[in-house]
Image (cartoon, rainbow, N blue to C red):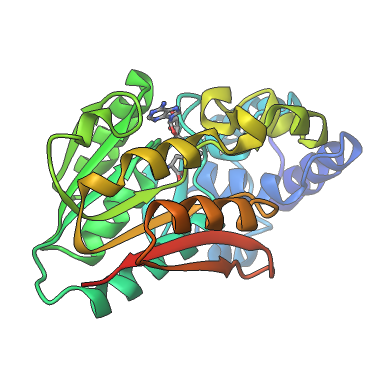
Length: 284
Ligand code: SAM
């Protein structure tokens, strides 16, 4: 005998809560398993699950109970209004990063006279930044890089699934883009200091790729390397936009001010009021 939607939801939510896991994940699973929107799920809570749905829901709930992030269990996450396939090869795209894309689009509109701009996303992961930028700015020539072959395979899938024509290159930092000149460079690099691992939730630490999260030099390694290698690769005008950790604003601001002495360098807060982005506008 299977359960009704609300019975399974209540039981799973309280099991998750007992383990200190966000109980809302049960609802996301149920939407996925029943293929219902949130609204119709609540209209249909008295509905009996089919045998297949019931098994699927409880198998996936077991994965949640083991600490696997709900986005990996479901296999997708929404970003900037688009759907991205995700698995353990890629960071689950975060809402803060949507703000980076938004800020970069907004500044690019003011900065460039032409629509045909060249854009690179360094460390593309799921492809979230590159694919969203391309969808929002269709004439941009967008290239995305990552050091991880597994991530690039997912990013390529996501570009295709979202009908975004993006070029992919594998390699370390700016190496794969060093032969060209760029109008816009975007990056959400790894930025967590190794000694911050003890502050992180097990869901992130045990499941998301460590090469997407952690960076040497107190988390500043990638910004230092970008500041060193980007200046000769940028056109004028140009925009460099990077996501940062909430304590890294002053350090990264300094790195980019020194690298681009004529540029307007801004530290911008996210919706939670934390320093989260650096925009470096190099005007003519
Ligand atoms: N851009 C995606 C996003 O915002 O959701 C993923 C960002 S994740 C924080 C950082 C990405 O950088 C990972 O996909 C990781 O594989 C990649 N990465 C790590 N080291 C790298 C390197 N040396 N060169 C290029 N990419 C690197």
